[in-house]
Image (cartoon, rainbow, N blue to C red):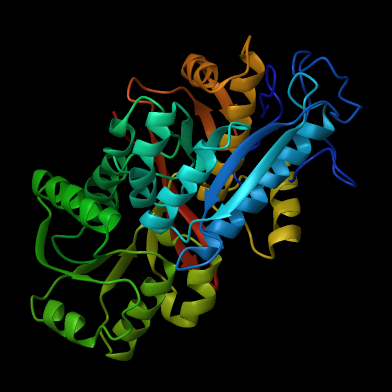
Amino acid sequence: MKKQISIFLVLAMCFALLAGCGSNTAPETTAAVGSTPATEAATAEPIRIGLSTPITGSFAENGLGTEVAVNMAVEEINANGGINGRPLEIVVQDSKSDPTQAAQIATMFTEDASILAEIGDFASGACIAAAPIYEEAGMVQLSPTASNPDYTLQGDYMFSIFGKTTDEGKFIADYLLKKYMQAENVGVIYVNSDWGVEAYEILADNCSANGVNIVSAENFFEGEKDFNAVLTKIRQTNPDSLMLLTGYDSGSVIIKQIRKMGWDVKVAISGLAYSEQLISLGGENVEGVLSEIGFVIDETNPEMMRFATEFESRAGFAPNMMMTCAYDATYMLAQAIANCKTVDRASIREELLNLRGFEGLTGPKTFNDDRTITQKNFKIVTIENGAWKVLTDSDYID
């Protein structure tokens, strides 16, 4: 796949090695990334972009992976001449995925006139908290991962490339639960957060529309470790399947306690938990657990494998869709900036809107009217012999 920097730089989907630095080979560029030849590093005044991501906290693995992916893209861009001869520079701040911290970072970034746009945050709640600050300052807030449909409604400068929870909820209810798992009576456990509550409400609406009965639903707060009471209560309703709307940390704990109580029930978990960490934390307990994800690495694609190899050598773990979306977001922003006649905050927004058919590692991207990307192609995955395995995919959303 090709990446756009000035026109299109080679992108590759979720796990392709970075090219162009050290032992890596840079992705191809078509002529117009900048005035500097691709063989020369950019040396002019830098273009500064903020990155707000959870380096610490509950989503630290995703935050660290985001930082690695963004830095890979930036190094690759700069090795190929930068953006019209100007190097791209990233200013990183740790949001902990906390709404208050994200808002403070937004104030810091927007008050710095040298920072022209922002990538982040990871969680929708953090994005929404920071959005009014970016909107007032007229600065693009491009989230690689926010899926709350309300996020981009906060203003005209909010963008997301991950897809919306509404797409995922429809797929889980109609395809994963009903068609694949043949579930009739489902128990749901969801994290009590902005994302978790919204994900549950969307899932419940779609289950009702598709004839899947939710017999019980329980929520919990991030950080809880004892789920025995919740599981006992749900078990009494006799569900044939369990749907967990949570990340890998809490998810691994819940699944271990399900197995410890000897409950042989089918378990699925949201794509938020798609990570090697779920396997390392859950061990043999997570064998057979199902999930869904919009993207996995294609091992037959050399660009993806390049990215994956380089990413893992830096991060110590394989990239997931969210980290790869951060890589794509960096290139999309670089392409928009390259297209600006005058590089300023307002022009960057306009050029992002004008991007059509951007070819990223996670697929082609064109913004909808609400500045989101529709996620169509979901894959059902399972854990088998200590590794994720793709079972099927579906070009599903109408």
